[in-house]
Amino acid sequence: MSPEALCKRYLTALNEGSLADVLSLFAAKATVVSPLYGVIEAENFYRDLFADTNRSVTKLLNVFLPSGNTPSVALHFHYTWTLKSGKVVQFECVDVFELTADQQKFLKLTIIYDTAPIRADFEESHAAG
Image (cartoon, rainbow, N blue to C red; front, side):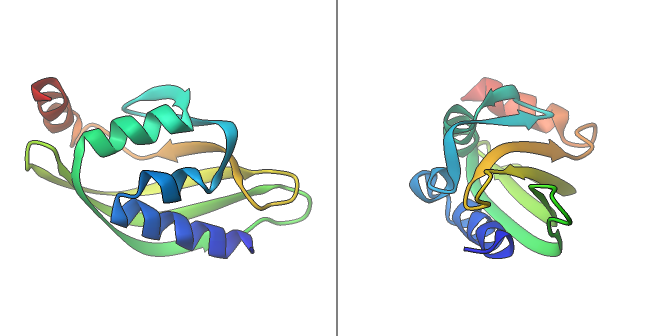
């Protein structure tokens, strides 16, 4: 599967809230660096994320594909996130994925976005859970 197809499958799985489908795209012991959840294994990150989420809607804006020998790809997308509390937050973000050597799975994800506008809503919803 191409890195672009891998990324599109990721967004579909995220929108569907499918833990199994999301995790199938990651290598064993893959890590996520998240501005809200910290550095965490992918399996634990997505369990926590889906527990904190009522609904996810993504709109793909750009895919930045690997160039040269750099095994990474980035997604730029708009995210509408309905928190467990029912509060809806929206933001643009970039997910930077480091790929396995064969470029068939994600090895590491670094999530980049400004949390200031949503942090209070997230913390309130997370604490209520």
